[in-house]
Amino acid sequence: ESQGSENSVETESLARFAVEEYNKKENALLEFVRVVNEKVQVVSGTLYYLTIEVTDGGKKKLYEAKIWVKPWANFKEVQEFKLVADS
Image (cartoon, rainbow, N blue to C red):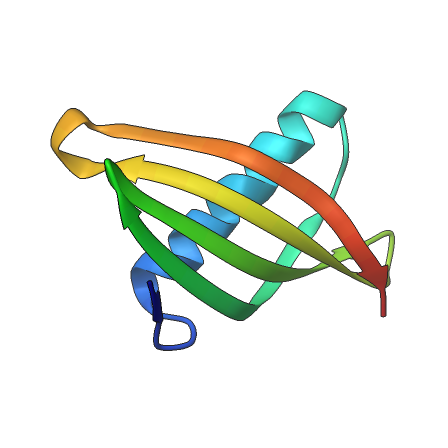
């Protein structure tokens, strides 16, 4: 387990992926703003725990996302995406 460097290109692209997947699934219109926090855990692949700031109809909100990545299998899945707080 390690604390990642804030907003690496890979992290930001995973965060954008999580927001897009949520929007598709929930028919929502969240817009990615930035990654606020990142925690990485190496398992069979890598689990990214991201705190993501988005805007929803102009209002800032924080979501927590858990994304499982297995690069060798070209596998990427949002396992959790939930509202933490309206900021």
